Image (cartoon, rainbow, N blue to C red; front, side, top):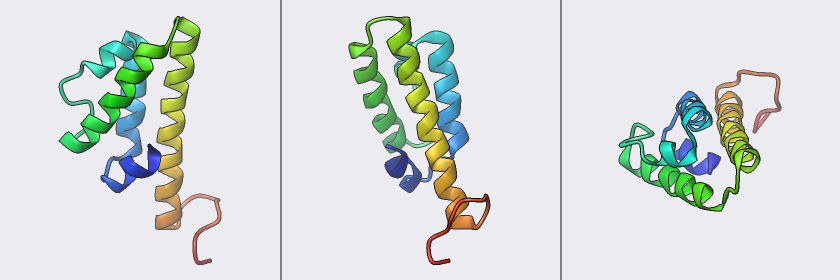
Length: 95
């Protein structure tokens, strides 16, 4: 999902923000947001994931794991951006 959202131009902080909303209100609540991300295509992608995750989580522990996964998606997106822009201490393509 990180690659697809990144290619749609979503910034990592937008995904991290949705993770915070899901952590506070639950995955189902986050899935019901009218537009969780800036573009309709990115919103549809994330909403589908949130809805599926909400259906399969069985309690607070599994819901928290799903939210942590969403936080990881935001982190991976940030690493991809850092690699493209030459920021951070990670190896860069072509160096």
